[in-house]
Length: 73
Image (tube, rainbow, N blue to C red; front, top):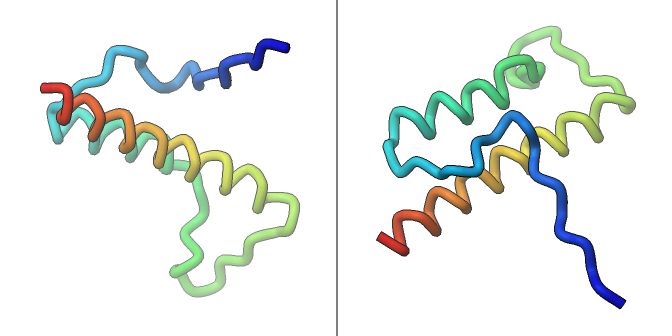
């Protein structure tokens, strides 16, 4: 049996930049519409948890790929 490769998000470029400002902008774009639990009065519904977790995982993957790109030189 062959394992399928995980699908990459269309919002993340496959060509990874090592430019810090570009990476920051990509992370900001991924997280822009997420609620800020630190803000007073913000409540997160149970149904939103999976969406938030997926977006955070996407941001994490972007950072990991950026670090891998830097290591490869």
